[in-house]
Length: 187
Image (cartoon, rainbow, N blue to C red; front, side, top):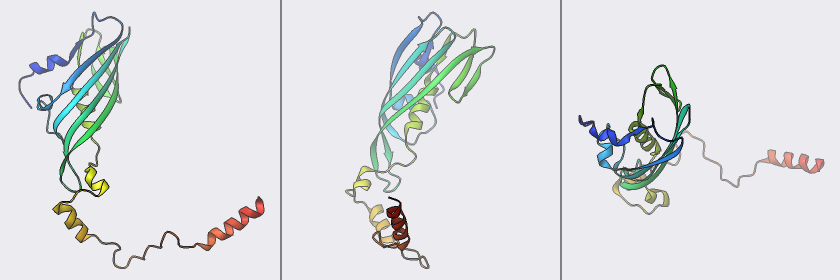
């Protein structure tokens, strides 16, 4: 994380004096933005953040949307690939006697506050948009071939020793015949 905090000013929204209604802001999120935060599970982000900022008389409603492409490593094959992500998040900002941190999408700012910095919320929206399991499209469709996948195929075990063999999908279960007979008698 960088020591210089001047970059944060770009994400300050001065809401005092702003007209009531919806205002839109757009930000490009690249390596430069993410370099100000701890390490992420992705590289080479090419993201856009659209922020709908609605000022009401007694609160602020802020909708964050982050979309674009990031480079990640496949959890199965370890191959890097571009992953398209889309994330949304909603924040309600109320005004009160003291500042309270965001919890469950609601936070409180002091009545005397006049700006809000949204960089942390944009960052969290982007990071949370990356799925927990990242699988290369080539693994899904079977077109990817690499050493890791070949080794996994060699080590694959169909059934464990002592485990009963799985029945084929077309195996007949006589219990269903009794249920079918009952159904036919009722209809």
